[in-house]
Length: 249
Image (tube, rainbow, N blue to C red):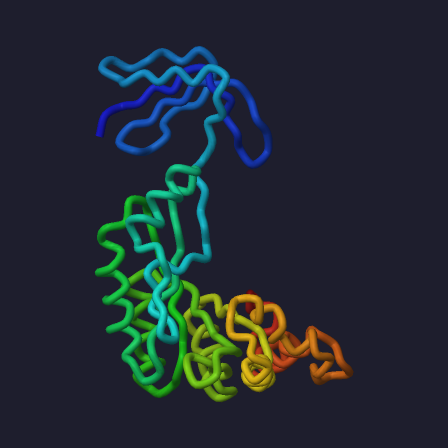
């Protein structure tokens, strides 16, 4: 890769913004400062009046995700190309195995789809079921593939919703591996019930989506608190001795 000299832009870091020149070599920033000398043969970019900032990281994407009879519109090329146009240079997508599907097999499928990506990418992996092979393969993903977060869905009954055994076993395995367990926290049973009631009302379009969360109907457990699914998740984390180590989505 060529050396790049970005001249006179406003460099934006986490702590401040300031006018500076930037030199990169083989994709790595090697110098930031005032009135730098352009290396011989460098490509010069005049950034006067422009912001120069690190590429954005989108940590939650679903490219060409097959889900409950549908597939998301963007594939790994169109989605990442659109992201690059807006300054997003890395995505973290979700590998979501079907129940009983080998999680390494699902991971390799997503890796194949992502080969056409226009930007950098990484993966979370969802745990949708449990046995000893899942426990073993979580270790392989962390130690050999660089995966360091696993997703758990408390929604989508009859599809990818975790039961309590899966949640606790996976939380414990995450603790052993030093990985981050993340949770989509909803009351999946009540959501499923209310979905059926909304459908019986003849509402089958997207306008029905905001009607189906339990808190809209006043039927959440735990004294009517809408945070009840998160409370249930935290109690499971306590069982796995993972308090404070889980991320809610």
